[in-house]
Length: 146
Image (tube, rainbow, N blue to C red):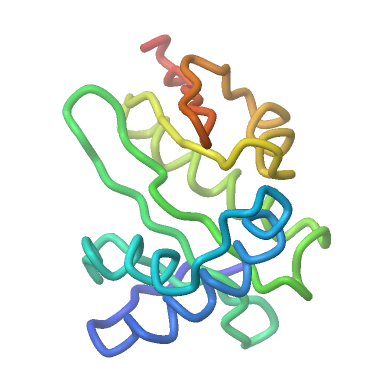
């Protein structure tokens, strides 16, 4: 599994992938709005923080990892719907956690309430710290104990 830097020209492709990945979860709770889903990514898109997930030579997803003073933020992690449930997310998460741990940082992430992502993050050592109207927020301390 490779994590490959994105470029500014990738913004639309990334937004399209995000919509496809989020659509089922958002539809389940009656909140699917394609424009809002696209805008959530495009509003603060930074190609220097965004990486494609490449498996078998194909771009199958992406992530956005934002280093911040108190804890890094895994702002986005999406896989194409047909590539979910194949262990790709676990391999990617192991790579992300190794990077964050090497920096001695904690990691924060949010997931849509009712999404399968909640179980995924809990399996990887994240602890629920807060809940909003539509999202659940998690934190994983650093390997150094932060």
